[in-house]
Image 1 (cartoon, rainbow, N blue to C red):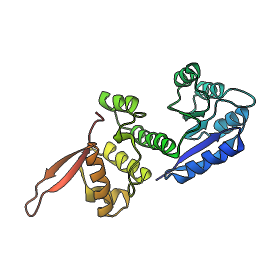
Image 2 (cartoon, helix red, strand yellow):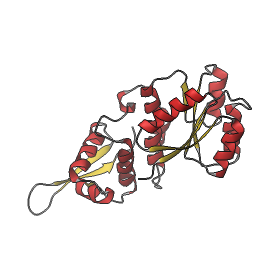
Image 3 (cartoon, rainbow, N blue to C red):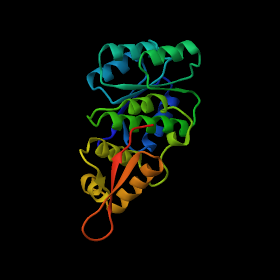
Length: 229
């Protein structure tokens, strides 16, 4: 499972180090570069586009919003989470209009940071599967990603976001319902692990379970990804 490449853009060395530590504590992400100016951020983003940029607004040479607009103008296949002390409505509005997928105001807790990164990871997995999406899925991705509901909290201990994203990808692209054994073989995990992740998705209401009856023995449960409500 390929991790998400992250570029961190922050001019304060202490905050930069904190954001880097927070990112490294999470599974599924790797910090591939850091920048302390907007010009350096654009050079790095253009030469080797990351999956995700963690972007401050207040930079010494240019606004982070200008960096965000240049990333969009260049057509880079890169997402941006704004992390800043700016709390005025205009800045928030401009960040969202320019395509930021989340907005974290300093100071923030590790739990809020983890929520943003986990929501991004799951959204990235859902949309990178390559299959068509329904209106329900789009509505769920656009309107529930930053809510404070229990569904948006980070997965519990024993459920890794990277592995969870892999399960979602396999279920999304599968042409037929899959059993726990099917998923275990595809992902190279044990059947017990597959059952644990499927139970988690079942508890969240994200899968549809259908029994398949054979000639002998108990029916086999199969799983299909349910559209996001």
